Image (cartoon, rainbow over all chains, first blue to last red; front, side, top):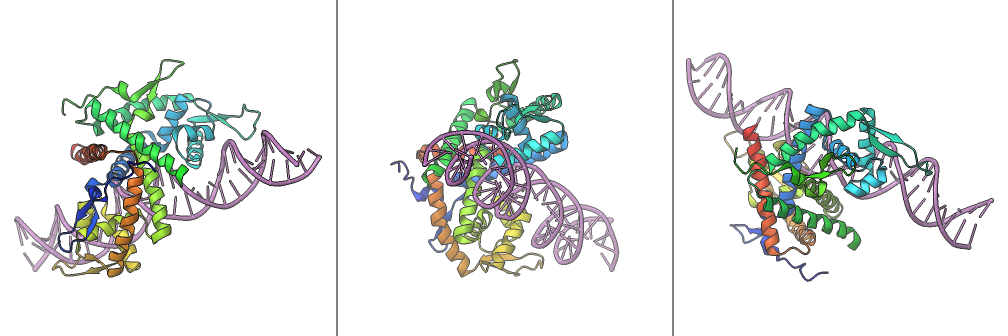
Length: 169
Length: 169
DNA sequence: TGTGGTATGTTGTCATGTCAACACGTTGGA
DNA sequence: TCCAACGTGTTGACATGACAACATACCACA
């Protein structure tokens, strides 16, 4: 256990006025703020994408993933983007059904499929990218470049700790 | 629209090696990192709380809310903690069923209920708080106090922008 | 006194992405 | 050659918390 693992409880607590007890401060607990911000943004974005493009945030992320790594398998995409393979599998099924992705079996391992975007999938990717960038910039109104870089650094550190949790459990 | 609303697209994009096209960089997009971190933490925590205490993360947040604001209505709790009133209503129903919260109708407005934790609810709150603090500190391994304060500041800013979105849409 | 608008709370529906179980193919060692 | 362990992909179950619709109570104004 690292020596820094000793942030004081006090910084996350708020005092109750009447009886000296304490409880969690939502405004000073990153986990609560994180959850609220993420949920509110993604569900909002997902609904918008569904209405405008017919796919949700999860499928949008798969479009991005296959744009970067054409020919990915479920396992590879799952490992690369850090999303559970069950969810990846389901998303690819939806994209295939919608004519946005297709699978090839080129491997000696007949279990393995390689996934590629169709032309329609690539076009949709380009269309959604414009909106996704706008929405993200809108979310980041009032942020400087340093703020964004710092936010990315802190969130990446959290993700490392979440991955590391598995190793320590 | 503020002048700062002009972070360049480039900072969120990554180039594709083969054909000069671009797509979203997951590692440089706060919205993606945010979502991954939040989901991974909360679902993990929720599952742990369910196993250890019989309530999920949502109900845990309601225990905190009623500890701070005994006598809250659904509407008030919803406004205070920023969670949709439907979810609040359902959570309170679960807590009531589990004997952890109870409602009183003290208002001239007979629609309105005031919610309080029972003794069992307060005890459970105290029990979960210990674990919640441990889990949050574990998540924040390697973070300095300044890091935590900065993360809270940036996440709060995001939440403000999300609230502001509604006003601007 | 009646009515339209608002408020309170409940319930339905939904996407996300986790964990788990399962079926089946692959691999390496006995 | 056989088999245990592992890998790949699929499917089930689930909690979260959003948006929406609804039922009913309340309020202010004509």
